Amino acid sequence: MHIANSMNICFDRFPEVDLLPRMAVAGYTGVDFNFWDLIRLLNWHDPEEADPWLDELAEAATDAGLAWVQAHGPVFNLFQESDDDRFQRDLAVTALRACGRLGVPWMVMHPSTLRMPPDDGEQLRQLIEANVDYFRSLLPACEQYGVGIAIENITGKRVESPGVVRSPGSTAEELCVMIDALAHPLVGACWDSGHAQLTGLDQRANLAALGSRLKVVHLHENDGQRDLHLLPFTFQDAPDRWHDIMTGLREAGYTGELTLEVAASFRAVPDALFDDLLGYTVRICRQLVSQFETSQL
Image 1 (cartoon, helix red, strand yellow):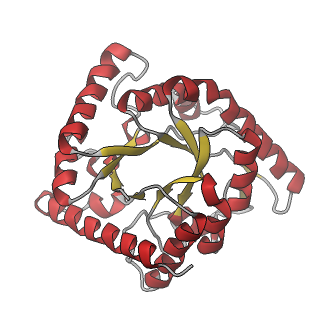
Image 2: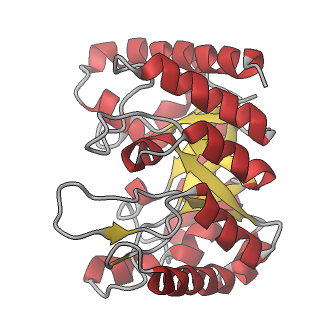
Image 3: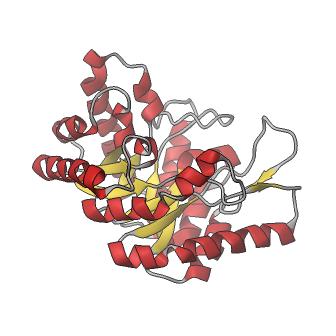
């Protein structure tokens, strides 16, 4: 089982190409290509600009012995027309192309949502159908570049806002509806432990329900109020939570990688301590692997 971390841990600190050998020295065997955080780095629509950068990154990963385990694609809302929504939506196929060039097997994408009253089953069904139609439109590009789409569970409640944001795909049940409707080998699920924590889900049960649909994970935790993207075992109740998550992964028959998404834990650390923290996160991953391997089914 590969242990991996997102490239965004060095964002705005030093070049991503320099991160890869440091990850390998720390003990990582996989890397998450976080396209979302790199989305304004260069003109991705121009292969003459994008491809040399991607090729340099690919060579660095090969030299470091790191596998590309997943990517994070653009994030946008199908139901909004802000400049940023249009900009990121226009890069979805381009991001799949970039993943294909690197050899990334799965690109994570968020389902889109809309503010709506709670318990509006008909509108929820329509939102799910709209997401399914959009993801279906990307399948020709998925097939062309050999990259799958992993639909991520997103936060299902917003305690700081009036009203309710009903997020299709915030539960395993809703992810299963979308994935089964698409019925394609290049469509699966990404389980984000922090989003599930904010939504107040039984993570063991939800993971088990995903079963073979589950392709990749984002592992991090929070205080139950904000999407903090902190390291596992940060909070006092963490041991029980991570036991349930690892057991749920076992019950799902998960065969993928354990990938951290914890950039916030790296943001303030001094440069002189960056590699120390990198090594510590590897030890956390190894602890999670041990729990996964010894979970009682």
